[in-house]
Length: 83
Image (cartoon, rainbow, N blue to C red; front, side, top):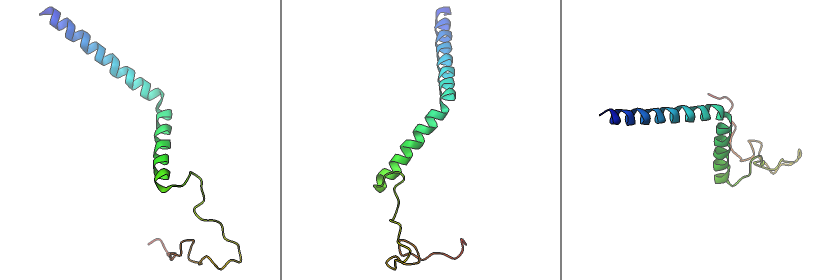
């Protein structure tokens, strides 16, 4: 009976050390983990749009050009208030 209790105590100690070690690793590397997740999320979103990060949505129009409507680059109406 004592041998079973000793094995359970050793297993419990090993699990406790593993949990504390994993928590310490995550705490010490949290900034790198967050940055990696952000980069993957941005790549996933921009990859589905087919645009590289920082690419302009539309070319900038000439000042005197009348080919682009005054409501915006997509020809959509601009709301006068947020509400």
